Image 1 (spheres, protein in one colour):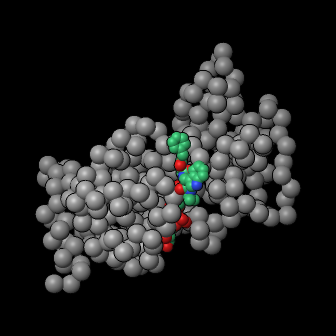
Image 2 (cartoon, helix red, strand yellow; image 1 turned 90 degrees about the vertical axis):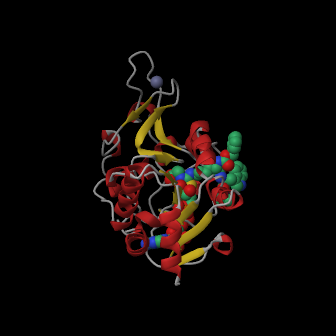
Length: 265
Ligand code: BV8
Ligand code: ZN
């Protein structure tokens, strides 16, 4: 029995399936990964700006970074990998089985593809959160405020900007006026406890797929050994090996948009 056949046998026998995705599952939709080409913006990598200290130093620069990513993400569509995961979930639910999708991605393409039980471990780039009252709202404004129009270019020679607070997005609550930040989890910030609880429950499964992630960011990467230790079989879909490859029962090397329809369909 080859690896695809043995995987499909395990999939058909699994009552609980959990999937962990990373930037690689959205690469074929045209969204650059963090560590691949296109992972830099100006002279910064995501961790340089996706952290509270960068926000405290220069919220306008952080918003130019997110405004750029929102502007380049707004027209991207789910690819066959996203769709194969949504279709698997629908089949499993119809059969009375359990499916959970844990994603590190903030692009919401899994939701657009029709996935339902999605845990957005690192939040959503299409939500903003008030830094004063905590109100979370959906927001797809491009630019985030008029002051950011034509100001988010990726050219590394551009200097860091300075914005007046009045030019930053502010709270919709009339008596608040707090500055709005992207509702994403930055480095050194804890994941929302409800999401951690859902993830810790979901890794107790029969079959765990880890798709398109370099598996270097914690606590998300830790869910792979966590699932293995709880008795799950683990399959990895990636272009290349990762630090988790050694504990995987199957490794499908190649694009997620090709492998997922092939092994899940
Ligand atoms: C936390 C949202 C503590 C934002 C992201 C020092 C101080 C504090 C913490 C730490 C520290 N040192 C380490 C840590 C922990 C830190 C961490 O893990 N750092 C790493 C770098 C070592 N983690 C944190 O800080 C977390 N919080 O620890 O809080 C705490 C705890 C309790 C109480 C108080 C405090 C928060 C981490 C979340 C950060 N936010 N994103 C935004 O996006 O702007 S992380 C971001 O990068 C992603 O969300 C993702 O999680 C992560 C990794 O990216 P990947 O998705 O894996 O993408 P990558 O480009 O790396 O890889 C792509 C993969 O796809 C590759 O393998 C490639 O081969 C493959 N691929 C490409 N194309 C395809 C493909 N595969 C298939 N098909 C294709 N077509
Ligand atoms: Zn507010």
